[in-house]
Length: 135
Image (tube, rainbow, N blue to C red; front, side):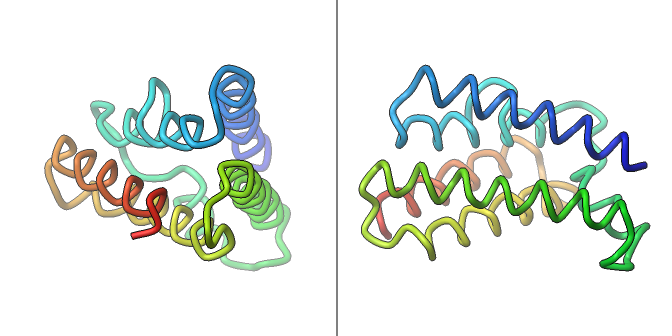
């Protein structure tokens, strides 16, 4: 399970790194959530069964287990990336905005199980725009 979590982590790190070199900070955040391979695409993928990190965390609740540590490492890294991008984009409140984006990511990954994926993507896109504009 650790190898599985680490492979997903590598894929997401690669996506974020490729976005960061191509786009401005603001556009990179939008692309991570709404662009090809981003969170929105994952939500709308046929057969999507929820966030692989959250699913693994549910099966390995001990915070000291190797799986939980690998998940925490990824989540800490992702939060740090979003925070750095928000600071680079001169967001007025980057720390709470990064927290909100993480919550949107996690919420979107679970809520899509109970709503139309296209609608979930529209709601996610709108919520990300609200965070980026400081709303």
